[in-house]
Image (cartoon, helix red, strand yellow):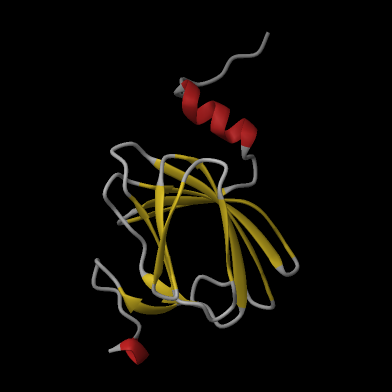
Length: 138
């Protein structure tokens, strides 16, 4: 039998499920990179109750979102839509978009990015609740 140092069960299970993952905290919640390869990246994104991401655009990637827990208000080029678990939405390259958690519980969605460049710096923030506007948007 082998012994393990004391590790919380949830944290241990997360390392088994996402062995090569990268988790990053943000003011609105967090994201975990589940997989990435040439021209694609898959993330699990958690948005805290009442929080929302920047209203933003990307110049090099499109995104496909599937809601898996909670209820999301999605703004896509100025049009608002409520999306429930199982619902999806496509965000084309260059489209202004935002997602917001409108429930008291955690919002969880899966994001699939496709494009020539998938870096976190491919963001033009048009509006941001946390003071992180892109210079060109000022």
